[in-house]
Image (cartoon, rainbow, N blue to C red; front, top):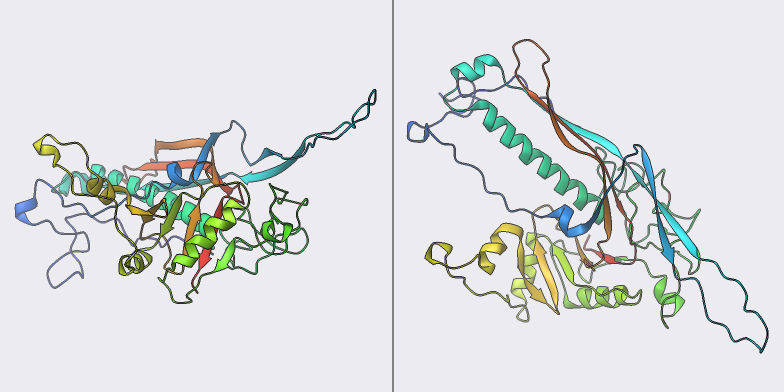
Length: 361
């Protein structure tokens, strides 16, 4: 639910902020030619977590996956082996439209001490980036949000270790209750739905839920056993874990563990002829080091009650784009000179074996 702003703001406004300030931020005379931007550490959610696809059709789109199905058999001389066919499963991706309208009045342009249009458009672009990051993270971690519709039953509840997998018994595979999918839930059966035999792994191991209770029930706590357990669960399905995504609280827990050391060293400043160094890259995208060969990412959008272990070489999610971000003039009248941005896309977890979500609380 979006909270409406009570009126369009400009640097010329006066209001309740402090004693003499205005609700539109006042600009100090020393900064009349430039504005101080706020700090942003990106989590490249789309490129990191999703396999990007495009479609020319709107609405719901079905993506088909091939499953291990055919087997060799011993045959007698002159006989013909039994004919076999390829097994498939399908994932339905829901494509929806999202938009944001930017309002700037002609009076704001005339009275402002800075470029109101440029400032508003830059912030709207940031808003789109924040929305995409939040949408991917909420869908990836199974968090509940009624606006995004993530979690179970349109955002009514989050996916937990007890959320079911099997047809008729759970919500993860029920498209009506969960359009964003999820990793393997409880109660699944090998050979039915999204689970199938792999290697010499026992069916009981393949059927384990990939939403697990962390060793500690305290938010922000991370134990080495959580990581080794997730590595083993992902490996049972033929995948190899390579990435851990954590919150700042979980990062603190790692720093407090003597076994965790950052792999990075200070870089040569670029103004001294050096290239972009690891520490500079850390500040940009949140990659803070490695552990057990896993890349560790931290970002404030990740909840302190959950963290995830993934195989990013195959991308656990799909991002299906029907129409990229389009900017048009809104022209609503009343002196407003604005822009309307919208895009049509869908998100879904399509590889349920390639991730494990550890839940602290």
